[in-house]
Length: 165
Ligand code: SME
Picture 1 (cartoon, rainbow, N blue to C red):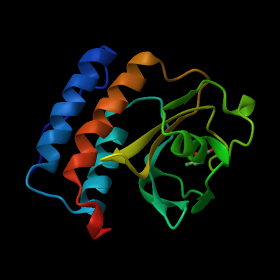
Picture 2: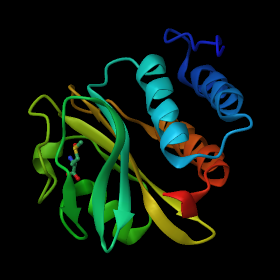
Picture 3: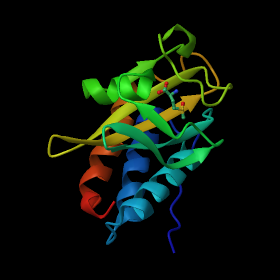
Picture 4: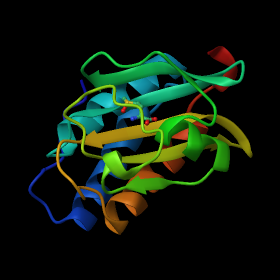
């Protein structure tokens, strides 16, 4: 049974180091997309404090479709070019949004969300989806979160057999 846990109270650099180690351990020997994305979202929800939603949107036929997540039920389909997730996906770069109300076109799935970070998932240059994390406070995510979550995605993406989705 997977037993390691991440101490939420650690300084961010240490927290993300432990999170990376936990993710590697959790995915060991498994490449199923739904299983690994589900466990990755569960791990994030356990490890990150002051968040209200975390999970994945997956690219399917030119739009983002809701994948495994933790939090309130969310919007299912997001066309490319709309909102934070799809903009980050289209531009293939991480978006840190300190105040979602100031982001043109932001899609409010959970009214509690105030800030957001979205990290694209690229497999050999091919866009597979995004990781999205929302927080109920303004300015929740900084450069350390960005580096930590980009590292998280970099561990996750090659451990998923995307063709099985
Ligand atoms: N806020 C996102 C939509 C996804 S939910 O936050 C889970 C956006 O603007 O793309």
